[in-house]
Length: 332
View 1 (cartoon, rainbow, N blue to C red):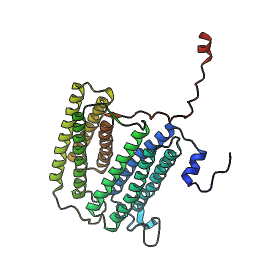
View 2 (view 1 turned 90 degrees about the horizontal axis):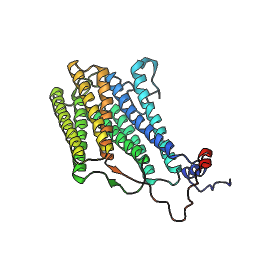
View 3 (view 1 turned 60 degrees about the vertical axis):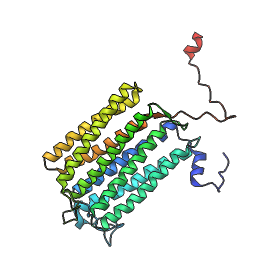
View 4 (view 1 turned 45 degrees about the vertical axis):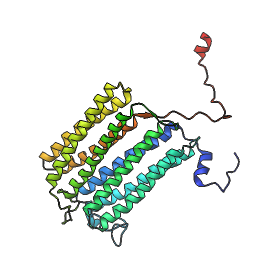
């Protein structure tokens, strides 16, 4: 193999030497989805263990130390550990970008989505620092969570695109059905936003010392949150009956049933945490469930379209013929 020209950028040089499989790119995209969920759950653990100010400054842990000191105890370790997970997330997203770029033919849609994830991670890291520097301002904390949800959204979209081709999308259901699905996505998004308000007004402030809270009655906001749960459940049921009535393909109908199962389980967890006075472990499980609900909603929407592989360019070499098994050859 000849020398790679030095004028190539690092990603192009990697592409010359490494050809990842489509399966590898898909798994890298799925790993980014998993890490996006992990970041949400561990961020919730920081708040629920009152470790939000375990490292009282940013980007270092203290004025004199990058890492937590012995005097800071377990709260410093938890908060600093969550910060370190950001580097793991960056590594996973970086692997996705490199794999998508090295794949031949290169899929620009995947590389763009990968870079979108990277910049969301960088922006949310800055917002996380502002959260610490403002003493866990509840509005900044809410924006920190919503940016994590935006990261999860792009990660799920990237994973879905890695599993399909680059041809134009083809609708599997009629336009009114897709409009109902978008209404479901919007209602679920509103449900998540209201959930962040409940968090900002509720008892789990994120630190043992007095922290500013959103000046609302958190129980009244919780009731609004429950009302939107019923709205989302109603829209989900309506979508399922609609898909059955129009004889939609199996994939969209299965996605709606999966969403319905996740919603019902999440509702049970929500009632448990309310009637048991918000124990930390149950609240953490509820945060994990919110990620699953959002993933399921996005899958419902994405399953209503499909993309085929683009046709091979004119003059491109034909794929190698597959070897014929000996038994099949002898039978012929």
